[in-house]
Amino acid sequence: MTSEDYAVDPDLENTSRASVRTPLSRALATAAADLSAAGVESPRVDAELLAAHVLGVSRGRLLLVDALRPEELSRFTELVARRARRIPLQHLLGTAAFRHLELQVGDGVFVPRPETELLAGWGIEHTARGATVVDLCSGTGAIALAVADEADPGRVVAVERSPAALAYLRRNAAPFAGVEVVEGDVTDPSLLAGMHGAVDVLLCNPPYVPDGTPVPPEVAEHDPAEAVFGGGDGLTVIRPVIALAAALLRPGGVVGIEHDDVHGEAVPALLRADGRFAEVTAHDDLSGRPRYATARRT
Ligand SMILES: C[S@@+](CC[C@H](N)C(=O)[O-])C[C@H]1O[C@@H](n2cnc3c(N)ncnc32)[C@H](O)[C@@H]1O
Image (cartoon, rainbow, N blue to C red; front, top):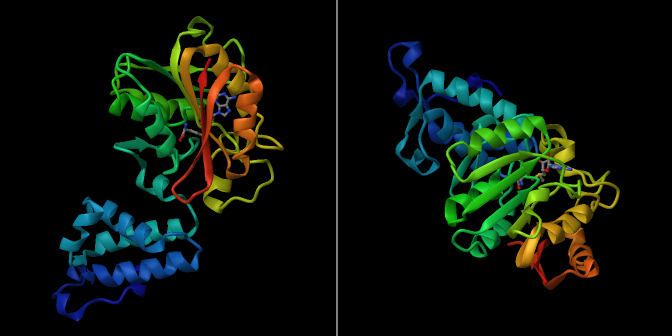
C-alpha cells in the first residue's frame, strides 16, 4: 500500500496538490483491509489507533476528524505498512495500555497483555495499606506499577533479569517513589534473601509458553524469547518461583502466578505439592481459559 492507493475526496481537494486531503473514513477502510489481508487480528482497531497516534488525538476523538493532510496520510500509510509486516502495534505507538497506565515498550521488552490485568487486579485487591509487594519477572513493570498506582502499598519490589527489559522497567517506574527495581534471577533461591518471611503479596507473570509452541509473528519476532518460553513443559521458571514464593511470603501472605492455558491443573497441583500453601485456587481469563493460580502461605 502507498499513499496513492488512497482515493482523494474531490470535495476536499484544494487548489494546490499540497493541500489535497483524504477522507479519514476512506483511509481507515483501506488500512483495515490491508491489515486484515496481512493476518492482523484486530485490523480496524489497529488502523484507528494508528490514525489517532498520527493525529495526536484519542481513538474516541477520531469521530471529530474528517480528513488527513498529505503529511498525516504519509505517516499513517508508513505505520500501517509496518503493522502489516506484523510489527506489534504497541512498538509502533511506543506505549502499551495496562489498566490505568501507559507503559513505555519497544525492542527487548515483553509487551504487557490485557489478560495480565486480571492477575494485577487480584493483586491490587489483596494489597492492604502499607503492604510489602513483590513482582517477579516484572518486564515493563506492568503488575508492580499497577499495584503501586491503584493500591496503597508500603513497598513494591520489581525483579527482572534482562538488561533491555530493566531499562524500560526503570523508566516506567521512575514516577513511582515506592517502587524498587532489582536486577535478579527468580530461579535463584537466595533472591531477596533479606525479605524472606516478610512479603505480603507476591505476583508473577513468568515466561510460560512450552518451547516449540507456534506463536504469531508479533511474538516470535518481537517479544524476547526469554520472556515467552518456559522450557519444554513451560514450567521451568514457575517451579522455582513457587519455592521462592514460599520462602518470601509471611504466614498468611498470598501468591498469584499467571500461566499458560494448558497449565490450569498443573500450576495449582505444583502449589499444593509444595506443602506450604492453602486456599489454592484456579482462575480463568475473560474468555474462560485457565490463566492464573493463587494461594495463601500457611
Ligand atoms: C511474560 S514476561 C512478563 C512481564 C510483565 N510481568 C508483564 O506481565 O507484562 C516475563 C518476564 O520475565 C523475565 N524473566 C525471564 N526469566 C527470568 C528470570 N529467570 N529471572 C528474572 N526475570 C526473568 C523476562 O525478561 C520477561 O521480562
